[in-house]
Image 1 (cartoon, rainbow, N blue to C red):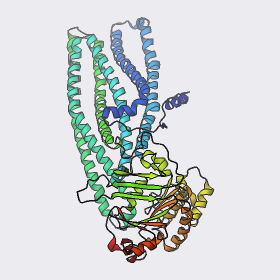
Image 2: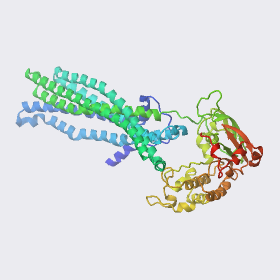
Image 3: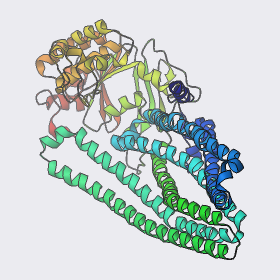
Amino acid sequence: MLTRFFQWLEGLSDPFPDNLPDRPPNTLIAFIVHYARPFWPLLLAASILSAIVALLEVLLFSFVGNLVDWLSNSDQATFFTDHRWRLIGMGVLIIVILPLLKLGYESIHHQGLLGNFAMRTRWQAHRYLLRQSVEFYQNDFAGRVAAKVMQTALGIRDTVLRATEVLLYVGVYFTGAVALFASSDLRLSAPMLLWLVGYLFTLRYFVPRLRDVSREQAEARSAVTGRVVDSYTNITTVKMFAETNYEDRYAREGMDVFLDSVHQQMRLSTRLTITLNMLNALLLFSVAGTGIWLWQISAISTGAIAFTVGLVLRLQGMSQWILWEVAGIFENIGVVLDGITTISRDRAVNDAPDAQPITVSRGEIEYRDIHFNYGKLLGDSQRGVIDNLSLHVAPGEKVGIVGRSGAGKSTIVSLLLRFYDLESGSILIDGKDIASVTQESLRANIGMVTQDTSLLHRSVFENIRYGRADCGMDEVVAAARRAHAYDFILGLEDPKGRRGFEAHVGERGVKLSGGQRQRVAIARVLLKNAPILVLDEATSALDSEVEAAIQESLYSLMSGKTVIAIAHRLSTIAAMDRLIVMDEGQIVEEGTHRELLNENGLYAALWARQSGGFIAHDLVVNQ
């Protein structure tokens, strides 16, 4: 019965809604309301129950005072007869009503809110950030972004729960206490009101300072997480260059800043506790003294002293909890404000409002007078990374792009995939401007193998079928065979004993060699079988023997497709239908391999100066 009630509460809100989230507001209240909106019915129910419980608990102290008076003035023989129904009523309240109310409150709080609220917030924030531009992630630590998603979700939840339930409970409790004091004698409420003034001044002084320190601490915590994750992610580089001591110092710098904010918070906390203890001591002394004086002048009864002193002792115990709850609200506000700067950020690349999926039937590609410089301003004599470039690739044509490092080769591919938006000009596929179609459908029609292949920390099977989630093991195995990856995959085993296609490859595929990662990536693109194929140094990580075998698979894959291939090793693309030579963001030469050699221009110079099949080092310009 109780389990069904819990399950019903847990199912009232969907922690994983299907609808894609919009950008959340960038102001504090609107940001919190945005994520809290689905939970308002539960929050309201929990708040009402909290208020009722607070009021009844205050009335219990009034009953204690009345009980003292009844015991003082009643005949022992007739006590139960005289007060039977009051005692029974209070017994029912204590044994039945209050536990049921608290059960309802705790069930809503724990089953309905605590788990689902934070999880839904993380889900929505993650889905929004997952669709951020490539540039967004290039400018931040992945670990730092992940830490902010986790921290901000908890910060929003705790801020809302404390503000809507705890403060309401406290407000009702305190108001009820003052009213009971005043009902006995108005003068009894004076110490309470003075204490409240001191309490509010204490809040006003300490809480904003705790909020600011908490915001600094949240930023410092995220920075430390980012630094540590950065070291772990690049552990091979750290080991290769023997720089563990440098990484120690790098992490220590971030931790020092974090620890400094912790020390500031602890100093404020100690001062806050000392101030609160002094206020509480003065409250107890003043209420007890006032009560005794009023009893001496027969203004109140013995029972009134009993319930006022008991209620003050209860408030003393609550006051520190209240203060920390309020401080916690502002600390969480600091965390949320820090999270807003990352989560509530406009996307640099968005689908047009009327964007439709693209269906690529021919694979024609056209660059029309495009200009791009990563948003950086240029001087009068400077050129952009891509400077007014035009290029037409016919359906089914195989085009190789060559040039020195920094010439803009990889950039025009990134622009084709719409990782960035053009600053001017347009790119068309089958006559459609790629800015007018959905990004998902655009990239679904382009298969790409890059030089720096990054695999997901999942099984080989999942990595190969990543571009076609509906395919089965037979198709995955066939793709692996065509990519000459089948044999080494069968020999894989991870630390958990998973073998072959079920073995996990480690973060970014770190458990595989460069050539093995490249062959898995090629198998993935073979299986995707997109009409447009982009090869960016696709065989650079392979040895000559494996490359020769892979080339057969690549030629088979290129059949019937439009291909753009980038290479420093010119021999790998010399047989393309046409070669494009780029320099300083522009096309300076184009033609077949033989035609370009006959022109005796830049391409001929690059070919003549090749060393081991690569462009000579003296011609490479750092990007």
